[in-house]
Length: 594
Image (cartoon, one colour):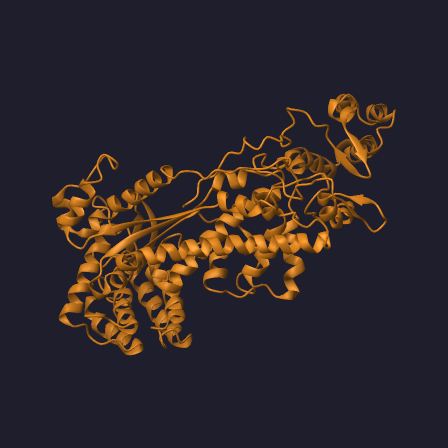
């Protein structure tokens, strides 16, 4: 019999909230508590068929989560103890019975005051309710079973509700794994710390959009990993939390994996997987549009055709894939399926283990989807990238830098100076750099489409996705630009030691260091002839390192071969110069899903 979305949600409400977390502690009062829940949410007593489905989902969720060795012989009147699922000797939480009863009463009052019981079947209201359950100690700190305290009430109930939703209408459940990449090449192709952040953050952002799509289609209970409450970025994108609850700066932390796994109806698995890939591609295109907007504003109509080859680079680089893992409804089908995957899995559960509970096969099925997904990705054939005669990107050294293929075309600046494409689009950053503010591009940099998106597109994309107000746009842009430089991180321990010495000011250290710092600044800016001797006079202990540093800088072969023309630093072309090869056949292609 086909169920309406309203009927399906009522079943999930039953699985999520009943029996209450106090059932094992106070069986006599469970009837009154259950009646209160049913009255609040308008739940009717389940039919015999519904009761059977709820019991099956309960057993499977329990079998999927519990560890058989973690038994607790505590008395029924003692405190409830929640232990670590991998170490029964580690106690995660201990709850006294009286405290639990008071917490339950308070939670019911909060439900009524926040009106979470009203229209709980609606998607947004359901998301709020599941979020409230996942956040409250009544569910998170209480073990689902007293004698098997290695998983909490909330872990069991959310998985049970997800199974009810996936198996509605007689369907089977399935595991859906979505992955975006390439993670390592995208992040490691960086010259600045901001590039490292941008690569990691964009991967996290794509995962967040996948989670959002699955939650809108199914609900938060369907997400296995990552949990929607696990990061500020997810809370802002998935739940739409306002700035006063999750600030933009907190949401700039990239802390999400590049893989998302969910429990879905098997008949919709392919549709949902394709929908997730579309969300990834949509965000990828939005990132490029933000990048193009910045470039067009800076080039002021000059250098048409600057983006030639960008579409090919973007299409060849992005990886996105999904794998569907069925979770059959009967033990024989599960065992036959897993046994047929040998030797890929190397081990298979015994039939008697699966017959006890279909949930007992969850770990094996979860392991199978990871193994199958990795094998499928390894079998993908990378697309070919032809390339052209432009220089290679200065950051990744793999793809051709953008700009007109005819690199001799120029534009004219406000003072009549001749500017190349990269000088032109970097010109507005020159004043910011002088004022020690964050900048986007240096005139000497030439980037491919992928690296340019990380450098110019990420600011606009972040602001669009986070839905910030115009009041915090400038703050957000400053935060994205204001990353410590690589040299500042490298010398951070030294600077910390110097600051501590100045603060302590023992034996006149402050005056000594101030003289030394002034001498170093003079050496850096002008390399005066007497700089080492000034340092030597100020501090004999620091003079030797200062002399070595200055002498090395004066004798540097890089400095002797570099020339500055109109503020543009150029490096002479050589066969060994990284990022300057004109060969179009050294491109390392990226894998993608055809």
